[in-house]
Image 1 (tube, rainbow, N blue to C red):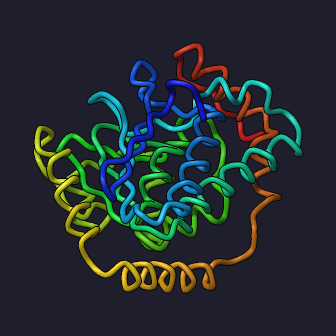
Image 2: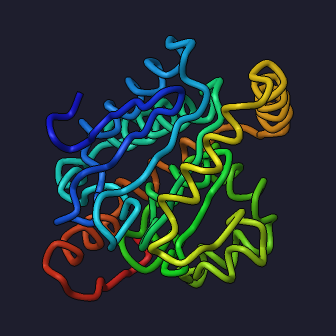
Length: 259
């Protein structure tokens, strides 16, 4: 497991995974993604665990996407496919966890962090939570078809297009109004409310909850269309993507040229 970058704890029948890079707004390294996958395996193998909570360390972010330094060596079509396959493997595993997963969201949940939060079964948000997938403004990359499907499931086509086209950030109250957030609470009450909700769910019939979750997952999976590998390769191997990564690291606006 990623040393110190994630913290896994178990208290009774509730497990908690904390993304622990507050100095980087909990941006995900590849090791952290693998740790998330391992925790999903561990939770499913432990019959005592009834609920998994995901949270970010500190008060600035749940997860602010993938650490941009991970993209510096991404150049070829194989690199592009490998990155999105890694994301699909981890996010798909999170989606398939047999126990309910609750995201406790403070601050920013953006990019890959938004997809982690949106893949959880429930999202309990502090009033300072912000969701966004600003790839059109930042890196010029694209999501996998599976992640677009997850956005469509929650937001529908029009809101998904608006979110991506405008690089909009959705605040907590907006998220609640459109069904992206389940509850919004003051920041100082977030942990207590999530723990209360986890304990309540953990006290109910686990087979009913597990079967309901898996039934919904199967229906959603059945509706999803073909992969978009050609579009992934086109974006990740473009001059615009390389410019987006360099501009982000240099803390300047990117100059996209459409090639």
